[in-house]
Length: 65
Image (tube, rainbow, N blue to C red; front, side, top):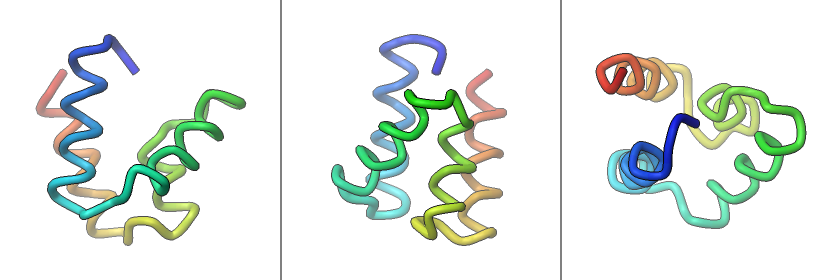
C-alpha cells in the first residue's frame, strides 16, 4: 500500500462499500504483510468478496492512482 492516507481511504472503502469487518480486513492484512500479496486478491481468495466486488475494488484502486 502506498501511504497512510491512501491506506485509510482504501480500508474505509472496503468497510463502507462491502461491509467488511475489521476482523475480516485484519486477517487479509496479516497475510498481505507476510508475503506481500495484493490485498484485493487476498480478500477474494479468502472468500471475503466475490469476483464482481473484486472488480469494483480493482477499479477503485485504479481510479486512486
